[in-house]
Length: 152
Image (cartoon, rainbow, N blue to C red; front, side, top):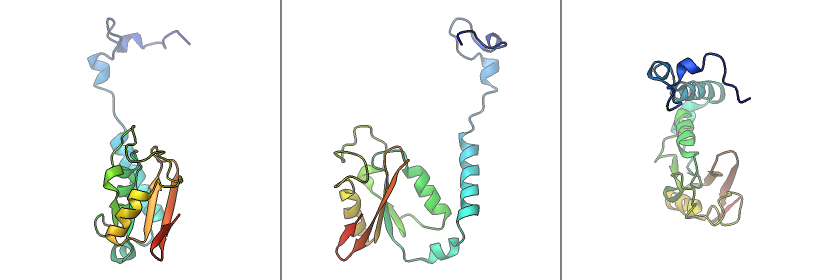
C-alpha cells in the first residue's frame, strides 16, 4: 500500500508532491455536472405535478439545522415548482452551515425543542408544515400544524 502506482511520479512536482501543471490542467471537478444531472433526473422521475405545485397554496418552512441541506433542498423545491418566499421559507438563523450549532442545544431535528425556531418561522409565514434535516442531511423529520401548535 505504500508504493505509488506506476506512472504517478510523472504527474507530481517532485519537491512538493503536488500535481504538476500538466496534470492539474487535466483535472475536472465533476460537482457541477453531477449536480445538474442529479436534479434533472430527480425532477423528471419524481415530479409529476410541477404545475399543480406552482399553483398550490401549500406553505412550509425548511431548516438545515446549521448544516449542508439548504442548497439542495431549496433547489429541489424549486425544480418541483415551489417558489421560495411564496411556498416555502428557510429558517434564517439555521440556514448556513455552522459547526457550533449556535441556535440548537442538540442539532438533531427529532429532539424536543430542535424545531422551535422553524415553528416560529412557520407561524410567521402562515405555513402548515415544517420540514428539517439534521446537519449532514441524512435524516429528516416533519411537523404539521394542528390547531394552534405544530406536532412532530
